[in-house]
Image (cartoon, rainbow, N blue to C red; front, side, top):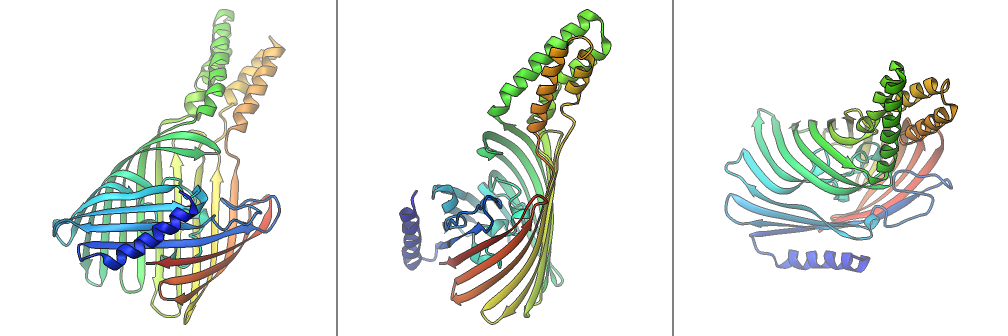
Length: 409
């Protein structure tokens, strides 16, 4: 889908909006925006040192159809400039609402990981040019296919919403530059409590995970071949430490692989907004897998904002920390120490293989970003945004400049 088709999608939405009857509710949204890293050779998530106006550009159309007084259907399509304007069906589900408190949805739904999950693509709906990547850039999957149950009620001055879901996901994703077939079986719960000026949210998600990375198979094959040979040699020569090391080597692929593993994702956030000229908000998220090459990681942000008529000024601090998994090569190192006294050539081979294993793991990282931003609501349903961010990766420090225009229709 090229940019002209995306423009056509916007125009089609406008036309439908003008002619829809009361059973239809058709809405659209669009963002034209991008940015670049001010230092040559540096990157910040999807941005580099070449200005790209399509990096943050998005267009979407959502159609809600009332089938009966309790049953409705929702479809949302999104095309993103960063994905060459290829259309993606983000939502396609039925909603059954047996009462004012209960709602049951089934089909393709948005992942409820974050405070912004329900409107993550709608740039006009939040103050930043883009939600802080240190938190919102953590997971590449935005939708699932399954069912959720939403319960809402008022408790005094508070409004409560509880959302529980079960889902299965099978997508081909980019994993560290490699295409990976990703299968997830997920369940989770998100709770939101709010009153006139305070919103609190927390969520927990569990997943049985299978991520298949074909690029790792040659390495795993070599490890198993070496381990089998050492096991046979250790048994024949009667060297129990070598047998133990060989068994450890044979277990390396299962340890490193991201198949038949469990993962958990925890999130918590808040918004303080009295409707005056200031607000603060923040969010924390952490993901943890069973032992594999995927590291543990946590991220958080805090934003303070000031309003002055049609302008909103923002200051945001965000952090993203990655704690790598290490020690996968330990059995290879142990076997090398034993073989150095028996066969130095084999020992050297084991050392080289250990280096390859270590190179496949993620390095430790800590990204910190300060961002100054301004939002100008210059027309009804339209806003101009500009941001300057200063990022410290521990290895480099650089600035990031971005602009965007958001609209809803």
